[in-house]
Image (cartoon, rainbow, N blue to C red):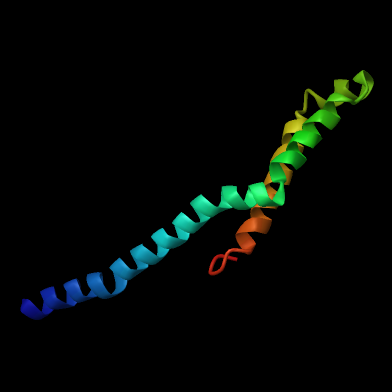
Length: 94
């Protein structure tokens, strides 16, 4: 019984706990540094400029684009590409 308990505790403290701390550190890096890197890259300005450019479209074109929410879709796609670019630059993640 003692060897079984020792094996279980050894597994937990040698395998599981270090992985928990490693994944927590990676999560912390991504959660805290991604907004900082987005500010550096200027992703928010790009999305804001895209929204203002959709506002300047003629009403004939906007009539067909607005029901499909093309403006919101392009914002999401551009934000996803910027986030992917930034996450790929983080060591151990990309």
